[in-house]
Image (cartoon, rainbow, N blue to C red; front, side, top):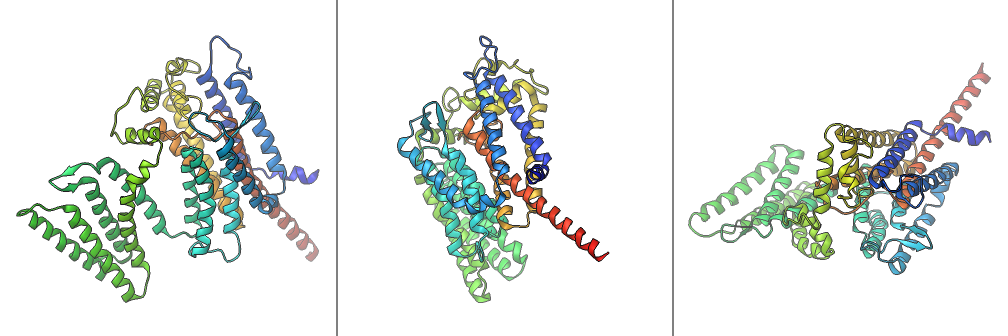
Amino acid sequence: MAYRKSVWKSLDHTILILYLFLVSYGWLTICGASYDFDHVFLFDIFGRPGMQLVWIGIAFLFAYIVFSLEADFYDVFSYHIYITVMFLMLLAVFFAPNIKGSNSWLVIGALRLQPAEFAKFATALTLSKVMSEYSFDLGRVKYFGTVIAIIAIPIILMFLQNETGTAVVFLAFFLVFYREGLSGYVLVGGLCAIVYSILELKYGKVIVGEYTSLGTLLIAILSILITQGIVYYYDRFTYPVRSLLIILLLFAGTGLTASLFIPVNFVTVAYVCLGVSALFLCYYSFKCWTWRYVYIALISFVSLAFRLCVNYTFGLLEPHQQKRILISLALEEDPSGAGYNVSQSLIAIGSGGLLGKGFLNGTQTKLKYVPEQDTDFIFCTVGEEQGFVGCLILLIIYLWLILRILYLTEKQPILFKRSYGYAVASILFIHVLINIGMTLGLTPVIGIPLPFFSYGGSSLCSFTILLFIFLRFDASRKERQQSNDFTRMGTSRKHL
């Protein structure tokens, strides 16, 4: 009994208070979004506010169980948890009914379970377990391939379930890899892939002059600038930087001069500049016996190859997903269709002003103008009822929570627990960033919940488990530290 009391005393009270605040604030916002004046009883389990209270109770039960278990339990059984969740996701692929275009919900009587939500903490545990193994090195192909496979399996299953939005969240794990030693070139390559996709989709069909695709030209120029910038970062104005500048100026000047007399495809000129500079970097790398410049050259080549795959990859998406992306890039206008959610969300947030219209006084939410206003678009309800101040408070709470997790993560003496802490912070960060970005029209509408806030049992329970596993790890650290302090005190008394 004394042991159990010591465990709960070691619980980080700051994170617990932030968690309870988000859950409570979320429930009040769900009340505001779902309130029906014909049924004023908020605790009716047949309504969303009442049902969310049931889910909150279940989440608290999960929190108690998760925190009561030994911290080593999650280390020992991480693979078992991962395999179990993947099996449930596989069942969903074949047996889940189609709900809102997604086959991700397992329906058992009145119970609906979404295994994809639980895949987040299962994958985080497994990745942390693998990365904590002896001699693990992300720079080796064997280990890097292993962690990529662990992430790829749930992503593939989510794509088979048409649950693309949740799959995007798994890119958060690359932030964990970077913290644990992944080369910065991979992150640069990932950012380039995102930017190049946007440029190709938005400007790929825009023709400048007679032959030149504006999107392709911008990608080529950006690749040259990135390559030159990385080389400059390492070498300033030394030999490779000066040589690259001369090469680029020579070919660019030749192309501009030729365009005065004959039609010139500037994409070809840019690609020649990029290719020649990449070959020069490879030559210089072998000359100096360092792989650094080869990696920089590979970024250029991979970027060109990726640009050729953008349209093909985009074609693999569902029509409604393509439409949402095109609307986000302002390539299509459809205020009454796929863009309706975002336009109504912006109206609701804008109508709230500085202090909002007050609890249960939102007009956009009461008249149900915003679809999914208590799930994916719940932030617009905060904006309308609580105004700019309410939105700012919510963002500060999320920022405080994530920073607190990172602070405690840095204190973890064991790699397994530290990696898991970074995974928790990364997942929460990506969720908040994308969800709020959706409501503001800054990111495509991919349908992911706001952590601890949006309506939904699977989401609330999975985030609660995700967070309280980390809290259990931190509590075990404090217990071990207290035990060491008592041991030192006992030793000191003996000496006295």
